[in-house]
Length: 341
Image (cartoon, rainbow, N blue to C red; front, side, top):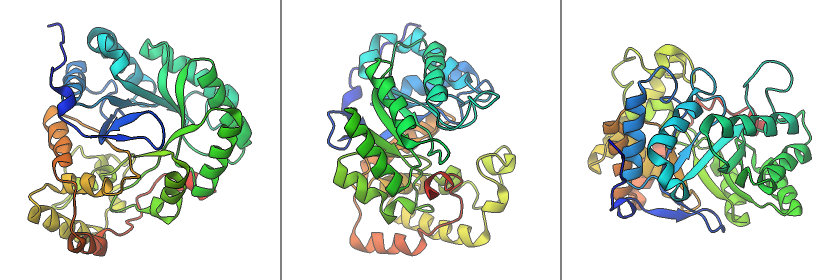
């Protein structure tokens, strides 16, 4: 069946301005980190992407090594883009990144100009695109001069391979340095992508202030704390869950103390008529400096539940105070090393 997008797709989600740029992003964006590699049926991926766009999700976020195997999420997305979404390319924000391990040897990782630009060329080829809308430095590299990494982003934009530059998991101080360097080059920083959730609030310690002051957008990844804030672990470790696979979340990171806090947050969600996941997403959006939150989705039903969070994103002072008592650091920020410099 030839795909035709829903006619009412732009009445379904609110959009927020990305810093002081001309770009608007949906309050909830779709990340392809976990469920778009070769281990998932392509037709399931297609159904999720189609439904997301029908519900107003215009932003799809990838990286070079999303899979598994590395590169497969971009290949699969590229196929669905070619077969279903090609007529809507100008309605989409598509992002990719480079900065973590991608290929063997000294030029397939970290922050060098050679790695970033070679990776971007590979990503465009895998997705069958002439350009991406946002190209990110996926992490700060203390061993590469920041001028070199930002210079690569500037080249990506000036060459037409990307429309905007982004960074991910940079500290407040390094973010300010990146903003200044890119401004000098004439390619302003559009957006920062940090991890942020009720169990990982590090960006409140200065980064959000920098982004708000400098007019840079913020898109929060892992707002559900790698699934901990979906409630799936409240009664043990479900087979096949991320924590049982000891990948981006290990079972020893989910302590009983953390689960006590999560149970309390689930109670607040219930009182608001929301699922725990919906509460977590709405809470991350409570600050207007947060442009969008990035969710994953393993099914259309999960996608729809999470997108429904936007219907109730206001909080009373009492609710925020109650959340603050249990929205505490859970030691699950596995990206902390990048923002520690």
